[in-house]
Length: 295
Length: 335
Image 1: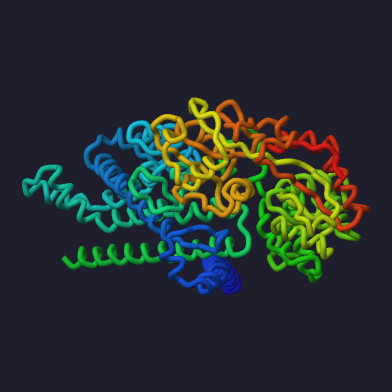
Image 2 (image 1 turned 180 degrees about the vertical axis):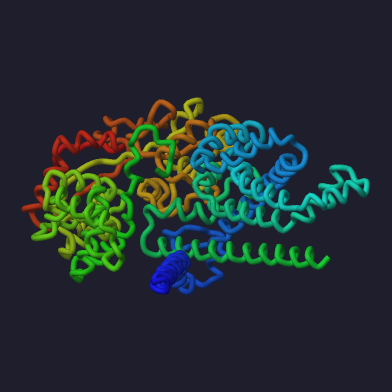
C-alpha cells in the first residue's frame, strides 16, 4: 500500500520533471528558431553583396540596390551610449539616495513610482518626446529637433527603472556589517557609500547597466518617433539619426524582394552587435566578481 | 498601431492585418501552387480576416499533438457548432487574383475585404509586385486583374483599363511659411539637398528641414517618379513612415517641407502650388496639376464573371464615396 502510493508519487514527480523540462526547452527552442530564421533570411543577401558593402557602405538606397548600413550601426551605438550617459548617472544617484540616504518612508513611496516608469508603453514616451522634447530642442538648440539628443534623452529616461531597481537590489544585498565596519573606522556616510558599498555592489550595478543598454539598443517605437530616421551618419548631436531597429520597423511594411532581405540582414547585424555587447559586458562583470571575491 | 499621430483614421494603408507578411510571402508563389501551400495560404487569409477564424486555425489539427484539456475541447466543439460559417469556405472556392502596384495594394486589400463580406464563398486574392509586374501578370494570365499606379505605355495599350481612383501628391509646408509657390525644379532641388535655405526661395533665412517617406512606400515612389526622376532624395532628409506623421512634423516645424497624399492635407499644413497651379480637385480633373497618378485596374479581355463584378463593385458609389476618406480622389467610370 505504502510502496504503491510512493511509486505513484515518484511517477508524477517524474512526469512533472519531464513536462518542466519540455517547457524550459521550448523557451530555448524559440530563441533557436528566431536565430535560425533571421540568419537564414538575412545571410544570403549579405554574401551576395559582400559583408563590406553592408558594414561599411554609407548609402542606404534599397531601390537602387545600395544597402550600406554604416549610418544605422553608428546611429544605434551613438543613441545607446547617449542613453547610458544620461540614464546611468541619474539611475545610480537615485538608487544610492533611495537605499542609503532617504528615510524608509520616502523610499517606500518612491521605489514603486520609479518602477511604474517601466510600465509606460514606449509609444507614450515617444509621443511625449515628440510633443515637448523635440520642439524644445528645435527652439533652444536649433536644427530640426528630431535628433540624436532627443532619442538619447528619451531612452535615458526609459532605462532608468531598470538601472535603478537592479542597483537598489544589489546595494541592499551588501551586508550591513560592511557599512558598520566602515563607519566604525571613522568614515563618513558618503565615504562609506563611495569606498565600501558601491565597490561591493559593483557586479550587480554593471548587470543593471547591461540590461539598460539592452533595452536602449532594442527600443524601436519611441526612437522612430523622436530620432528623425535620416539614413545618414549624424554630424552632430542635433542631427537626425536612424538606428538599426528603426530601419527594420520603418521599412518592413512595404519591403519586398532584396529590400526585405536587406532588412533581415539589418536584423543579423543587430543580433551580432547585441551578442558582442552582452558578451563583453558579461566578461567584465565576471572579471569584477572574480577580483572582488579574490580580495 | 505604428503611429499614434493619425487622428483621422485615414491610416489603414499602414494597418496591415496580422500575419499579412506570412500571407504575402506565400502569395508570391504564383497561381500554380501545390495544394498544401494553397491551403496554408487560405488558412492565413482567413486568419487575417476575422478573429473568429482564429479558432478555426487551431481546429485544423496543428495542435493535435498536444494534450487538450476537456474544457478546451468542449470550447472548441462549441465554437465549431456556433460558427459553422468558418468551415463552409473550404469547398468549391471561387477565386480571382488581383496583382500589381504596391501603392494600390493596400486599398485593393480593403476593397477585396468589403467585397468578400458581400459575397461569402468568394476569395479575392490581392498581391503586390509593382505596376510593371501587375501588367505582365495580367498579360500572361497569371492574374485576373492587374493593378497599375502609372499610365500604360504604348505597347501596353491592348489591355482593358479601368481607372478606379486617382492619387494626388501635395507638397506641404508650415502655414506660417511665406513661400506659396515653387517650380518643380525648385522642389527637386530642395529634396535632393541642393537647396538648403528658404532664403534662396524668397523665404526666411532658415535652413530647410526636409521630411520624406521611407523607402518602399508608394507615396515616396510616386514622388520619386514624378518629381525627382533619376535624382536621389537626400539622405539627410528626415524619414517618417506614414502620411500622418509627415504632416504632424511639418505642422510643428516652421522650416520644414514634405509631401503627402492630397486627400490628407488639412488646415494644420499649407499645400503649396506648383508652377502656379494650386493642388485642388478641380485642377486635377482639368489635368493642370501635375502630381497626380491614376490607379488602374487592367484586364486582358473584356472582364467577365467575378473579375467584372469586382471592378463594378470598386467603381460603385459605395466604394467611390469611401475614397476621399482614404486620401484618394474618386473617378467617374472609365472604359
